[in-house]
Image (cartoon, rainbow, N blue to C red; front, side, top):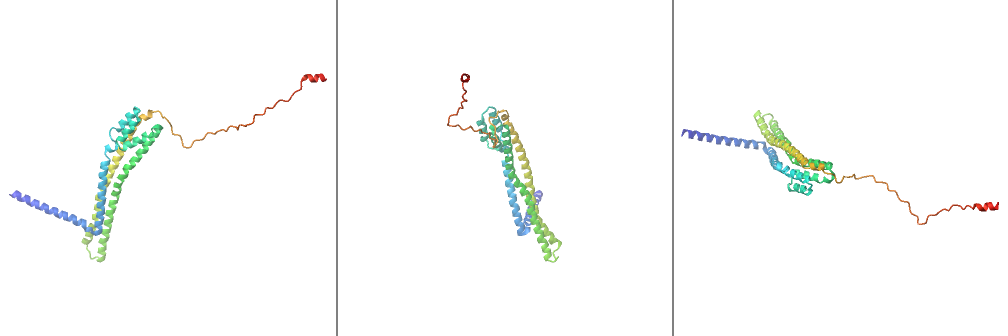
Length: 274
């Protein structure tokens, strides 16, 4: 019986402490006034956006979404045996970043390895920029949230010192301290939003770098047989020097004139006259 009574007393004390603690947090949240509440609403919206972006990156940065298994090996085997349509079909069956890069390289297949390699590098840069573009929003939220919280703190301190000024110093240190701690609530809220956002941004950025490096390795491995493939045609520059064309002389409709040599008198005639 004694143990049961002690347990009931402990439970009642715990419930009272929890209720006091919850009421204290609610008082702190609403202690900043209307402006402080607006700042907290903005911070809450930023936190929801950061949570959505984090969930989106967790789902989109999976390895099977970026570098699916079997695609590079299938493309390599198709290129080794000269079955180009099968290599193209293998890429289109598994839509991913690796498939897009491989299709970019296969589109320049007839132009030789140099053009294929350039197309792969350009496609890799474009895909890396696309993946990083959504992650950058986490960095923006992580940088904006502390500033929003600091805005609420500064305005709260302005109101606190204004109260001291209006009372001509009648407000004591307790009143001033109460106004300052109420203003610091928004700063705490901004830091609570910013710290996880920046941490998730760093993790996702490193994840993107690792996946893009893996895509580059897989694409080089899959397209390696093109190095030993003879080039069927080469790309010529747009502006080439034109060869000079010689015009043929015009053909006259009249027959050519043949000049006859002058007539020479016979030698016998001169001797007879003499």
